[in-house]
Structure formats: structure tokens, C-alpha cells
Length: 263
Image (cartoon, rainbow, N blue to C red; front, side):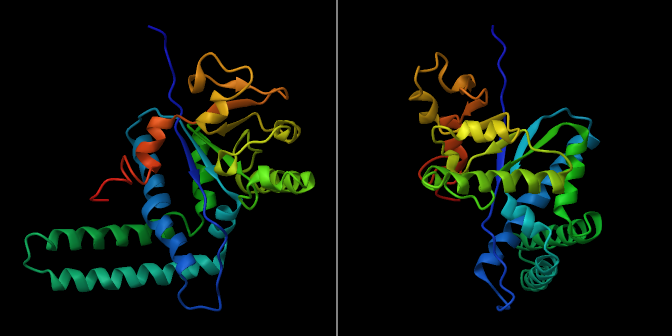
């Protein structure tokens, strides 16, 4: 049987938000929810895998806007207030559900979880998730890559090629500064590609990127193995096609995990 490889690519992105004029902001809440429910739990998974000596490989694309927000001391302190409000609510729920065999364990679970999140963010990581992910990647099991500077839709911007170059150049520069090495790969916003984009990527030292499945299926000549093997562009940059079926399980509004009624 021919040996195959599974590549798990996680794309971490949020648009840039910073609203000091408001005490509470819906857009900032998106960031705080993602830190609480995704980024800190992901770092905890890495620590457990390392502690259990389990080998793994993972690629994570961190968009420049998200990395910039991670480093913003104002947002870090505003996140502290968000967590303290969650902890206050959790305490009230623990008291309210005391003696309830169904909901009391759930309330205590969330209080423990929020307490651990607060400790991890402000004590373990000192509020710096950029440094936390940079350290997590030092063992060579995690590869950090980038995305376009403002997550702009590059084919649409291609009417002004200098705008596309600026998006990619700024992304590479920021990634190199924050994570200590230039990115070898990139997650193109919306996996959208246009002819000639590979030349800019090659010039900036990008070796590979990802496209939706139809970007592979409709390539000329059509690849013999579809999305199950990378293809090489004229500028010698590798292209990996996103697997349709597995992607739907985690990103479809009608099927898979997000499409499930209970979710």
C-alpha cells in the first residue's frame, strides 16, 4: 500500500479591532472569545502532547492583524476585564445551581476553566500569545506561517499590483520580526489565487500556499492526483489543495460539526 501524508493546517485570523472609545465592543469580544476558547486551549494541547512525548506535526497560519492584536497591551488589559466578568458570572452560577445535579457540575467546570485561562494568559504566558506560539514552535513540531497583511482579497486587489505586493511584503516582514524567522508558507485570504501571484510569493521567499479544491481541479493541465498531491506553479511555488470533504466537517453551515443542530 502506498504511504500517504495528512497535513493539518489551522488558519488563525480576526480582523483588526481596537475600540478605546467604548467600554464594551462586540468586535473586541470576538477576539476575547477566540483567545479563551481557541488559542489558549490550543497551546494547552501542545503542552500536553510534549509532556506525554507524543510526536505530532501541525502548521498554523497566524494573520498579521491577529498577531498585532495579541501584542497590544491595551487589548491585553481589556481582556483581563473580560475574564474577570466571566469569573464573576461563573461564581454566581455556582451559587445559583448549588445542589442541582445536572447544572451544578457544569457551572463548576466553567469556573475552573476560566480560572485556568486567567492563570495561563497572565502568569504562564505573561499576556503575550505571540511569544507563547513562538516558543511552542521551537521544538520543530509546529510550523508558523502567515497570511496577507490585512487579509485583503488578493485577486480583487490585483488591479493594483503594488497593493498586492504591499500586502504580502508587510506580512512577511511582520512575521519575521515577531516569530524570529521568515515564513515559508502562506494562507492566502479565502484561499483565493490569481495568475502571477506566485511570482510575488517566490520573490518574498514563500515556498507554498493553499487553494480551494476547484483551484486544483481546474488547473491546466489538470493534475493527475487532484487535491491529493501538491502541484508546482511556473514560479516554482508549491500549491496544496484544500480537501473538500474534511473541510466541510469543520467549516460548513449545513453539515459536519458547525452544521449540527445541537451546535
